[in-house]
Length: 434
Image 1 (cartoon, rainbow, N blue to C red):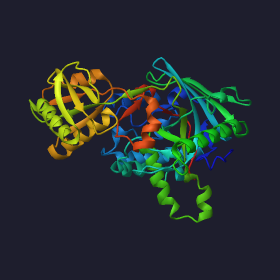
Image 2: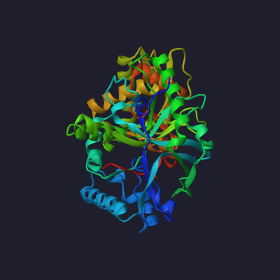
Image 3: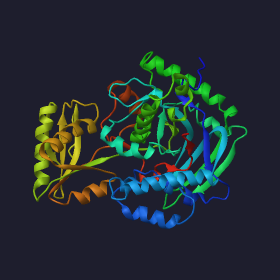
Image 4: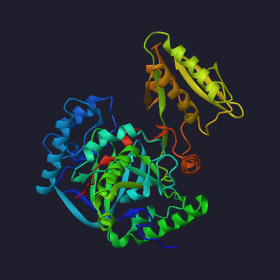
């Protein structure tokens, strides 16, 4: 059956891009939630951009959240947005989508920049919306991000949303769409790889709409009528949740007729196919920080104690011990010494779920601090300190994502990452919110 874009939770946008002649390498900036512990990265980006037009002036790196000059920076963002529109730095394209080819870290993936309907997204636990959160939304993270979006005349997406399309029927055929035109073809700053964006006019999107309709019918047959999951969050869960919160505020002030077409009802994002070979799910490891020497070993012992209560059993075994039947084996490190944490008959369907439940209890009850780390080397380095304990998690099978979320709901936070930091989405396209 063929469905409208609205029934599919999507909308063809009017995308805004910088005017001809803009230096896209300076214009394009990595997602704001990257390099939050690396101020040098953002200083180098600022030096590289200089006075050139750049999305760096239209977003707030999360490194600066909570800083003394946060409010000043947000006001500066508003001024830049207004100046870029009134000064003609941004131009609006006809209705259509952007087909994006991104290459980084030796991998290449394809995406489609389109709008999603925020009325089709619900981040609350147990929601059966067309667009699902894949990790638990920390509602406390929304208010500071809402300050940035509230009243902003533009949005720029770093949101990646996944579809489950093993036959590659939606996005991939658009590479041969008639009437497409290359808008940008550029290297990305500071080792971000390369990206090409081709504009696809609305009248060339009918094949994609029919293919999405087929995915919708398939989702209904798999998950049940009224429970169909058509899209799942890949990156930017809290950014989409912030857009949702903003829309919920705005819609209270509107009539039913106004709600149907208000631009804040939608959010610009990039759709990607989870079956794209260029998409890799990287594990996100954990490090627990104690206050004094010896706390690392104590953290491991207390983790075992909590896991015993939450699961069938748990114990520490020698390094490189393999998991037995109905067990998880998680390498752990404290004071530079590696062991294996065995969780027997786990209550959660994935390793990170069982572990996170225990670590959350320790953070709440014992006051330990936790950080989420990309890269095994960083975990090993931090765990050389005898006050700390590191937990090395396996990568999640990306093909388990849709069934796991449909069955169990949102996964524990920081379950997976779609590639390394340099592979994250860079801000390029914008859309008017007024």
